[in-house]
Length: 313
Image 1 (cartoon, rainbow, N blue to C red):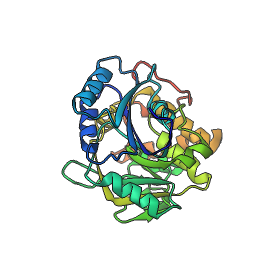
Image 2: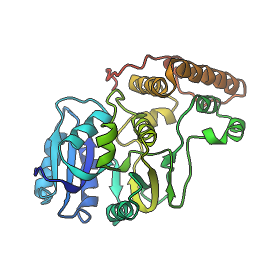
Image 3: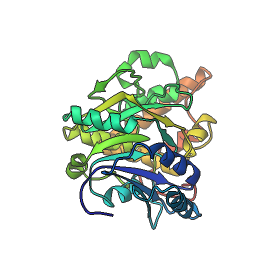
């Protein structure tokens, strides 16, 4: 790989999803330009994922713009993306989930938007389902009050504290948002230069919100471009969303990431407040026959904020 600076580096993280990665690469083949490169990071899958992806790249003639980087360990989402970012020098990095399909023209639209808006440093596209149905991909930060709202699953708290509702449904161009999903996010190199790479103490989840929060604190601006469309097959690269949907217990790394987030941005007392508000909301919701909690979450929220890959990571 050349040491020169490329206009764009697309980082795709793979963990045992070679079929999805190949579909994602297919969606990019008519969108990459001579000054673009795609780095597929295999996060120590422990199967034939890397070989399968490399074979597809060679067979399809994509090796002029795509390559596989093999991480020696599975350090999680943040660590895997950092492997890709460190492997190449680029003006803009586009982090892309393996369970995505990039609609025609989306890459060009995002780059054109960044060129037109030099004051925008991070940019999220419109995420959607395969049939084009809208997905919420822009959000407000989680706060201790959001834990009350989430655990109770009662709309009255959302009406009382609208500025603490995490999901922020946007349908038009918006600049100055809190954070956007890292299923697909464009980040200028200068952001990494100033605040560093993704925090590897998050194995998976919360790292995108935490990075955006750190970036906005440093004076960087995040925007949303609904004219760029990317399909996100939610949960295709992680079991957490499906477990949440079925109210099953989440992996240990989710609880650790949550604890690390609250302790980082609110301190030990803020983490305690978040948990107490969660417990209060859970009790109120349970009394009314509804709650947003999953199995054993009342216990897991007290997890220490240690980075843990664990047996179920």
